[in-house]
Each structure stands twice: as C-alpha cells, then as structure tokens.
Length: 246
Image (cartoon, rainbow, N blue to C red; front, side):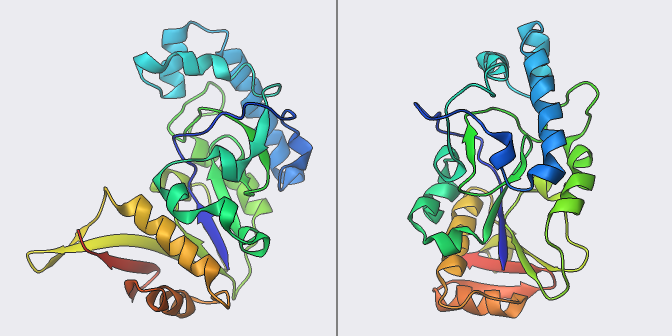
C-alpha cells in the first residue's frame, strides 16, 4: 500500500539545518531536472516586479513577500517534510509519531518537488499547483511525464489517494488500484459532500490505514481496516467513502 498525501498550504519554516540537497530527494534521477527547472524559474521570478510575480505565483496582494522566498530555496535551512508540512490533515495524521516502516508507505505530492518522502529534507516554500510560470505552464502537465516514469505502478498494488484534484491530475496509476478517499455527511436523509472536515477525515483515515497491523493490499482491505478503526465506510467503485457526523 502507498498513501499519497497533498501538500499543505501552511508550512513551518525550519529555523536551522543544512540547506536543500536535491540529490537526496526521492526519485532524484527522474524528477531532479524538473525540480531544478522550477527552482531556476522561482529565482528569476523573485527579481521581477512583486505585483506581477505574485500573480504568477498565485498568491494574494497581501502575500507578495512570499515571492522573495523563491530566491533563497537553495540556501535556506531544510528539515524533514514531515515537520515542514502543517495543517489539519497533518495534525490529525501525526506523521512524525508514526513508526518508520509506516512512513515509508507515504509520499507527499508537491507542485515544486513532484513528490517527496516524509523524511526528505526541504526548505519552507510557497508554490501551489495553481501557479503559472513562464515557459512551464500548468503544473499538472509539467509534472505528468516525469511522475509517470518515477512512481511505482504495478498490477496488484494499492494506491490510497488523499490528494486534491489539482495534484491528482499530475499522476494516476495505469496498473495499480487507485482508491480515492471522500468524506460525506447525511443531511435530510441525503448524502452531502463534506468540505470543512475533509482534511481531518483524510488525516484520520490515513493514520488508521498506516497503523493497521497488516497493511491493506486492496480496496476491500482498506475499507475493512478503516471500518475496524471505527469509521463508517462504503466502497463505491474507485472511492472509499467515509460517512461522518456533520
């Protein structure tokens, strides 16, 4: 089982530590050239007028200082991704508290890095899938060929997808089983998509699957593990639907 997580918009900036080592990141051979291309583009963007640069980066007018971060990514302190990514999903999952064997079954999607392991050391950055840089274009399309060449994709494998649409568009397996986790509540007797609790639900489900005594190997096994952890779940095609109290 492989669990794919989204990155978080909120990140903790490492206060100290050695800088980024691109060769140490997972899939350096396949993804390294793309990472270098983006780092170069962000360094160039940091020298552009802030208002125009912020628009390309996809940040608000009040966040123009984030543009300058792109100029320091190669020299800024780095820390394990499990410590850099923050927010509701990561708080509920508690990556840093999980056994090392469980963390090895996790990859984190990223608009800047493609994917990283929880143990990969990265700096604080601000770069989302909605950014549009000159010569690069839509990031899902930019990353798609490299991710297809790098990520494991064999018949019989299980990939549990916690990513949002912007990141899932960059890679989907062709051979492995892809199981997306969705959250619903019941209102007026009808099932309603949950938005405000979705990240918490995905974090809780990811934690349950990673803590299962035996890692699930198929969709039914994932559903059984989630149900055993106390979740109300249903399998609907390629989706694991979690029913929560709103």
